[in-house]
Length: 379
Ligand SMILES: *Cc1c(COP(=O)(O)O)cnc(C)c1O
Image (cartoon, rainbow, N blue to C red; front, side, top):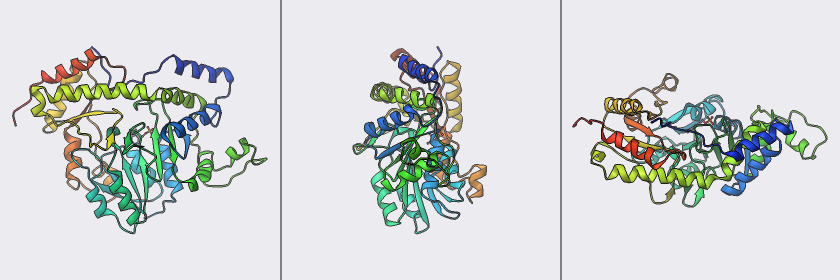
């Protein structure tokens, strides 16, 4: 058996949409699918305004530009995340304040966010790990008390909710990813969600190379010029066509992922190996999207051996993030190993199991069975 950790599920509609783009000859960004997909996102997630981007990395960079991050501004973010969450703000000279995570949700520890927040805080960046929402109420309160903005890195949180609201639409700006490894795959791609009207005009300029090209396209100006700082964050029509077709079936994809996710949780909870595993728990006020299923075991050796054991059986299990704070770049911000114990412990002992929508019950049961056959050492 060969079971990949992640696999995009592209159907006939995706292929037909890309074929249509190729036939039209209109491949560049800012075309028909660009606006169609942005409008779909606005409708599906009840967002004020969405703009398609080339990646979540670039959505985060747009957020840094939009919020006018200046050298020395403090930005609070988790260490347990992908480097893009940090880079976007470090590129503009932000002083990064790494926050530890809560051991149950693997999201930012809000007590530590509270300790780190001050009048120097310009933004708090929330990462909704595995598509389970952060404690947004507490984070929004801390942000408000310190006059800071909230930027949601919802790369993994597309189509998940917190108290009935979609992730990415709760803070000031939200960032989505449509990378091939994410739940809604366009190869590369993303979207930036603007939850405040004041960002919309500048976001259009920033995305289109610092020009008012979007206004020109709409016939609002008769030529376009350089009006703002900016870059090239517009995806090609092929990417937007893929994202559009994936999002059109967002609830079908989500329900299959959730069903796989629940199957792991139920079967592993009731299995005799349960005593060697720590499994995710979803707080009542969060609706997950089944993006990722994690298991925490006792210690790095056990984790590495279990990953190898699963791979030997053709299962694409994998560890996840190396903490940012203790990385080479993290050390430049004054951090070192030992500073964020929960992050370090989780990073050393977590593994991810395949949960993508294409998996069959038999494949899921094979993964569970293979874990059951692993010889855990008594601690
Ligand atoms: C995948 C991911 C990113 C980067 O997304 P891209 O679209 O590949 O740039 C950023 N943050 C988190 C939390 C991610 O999981």
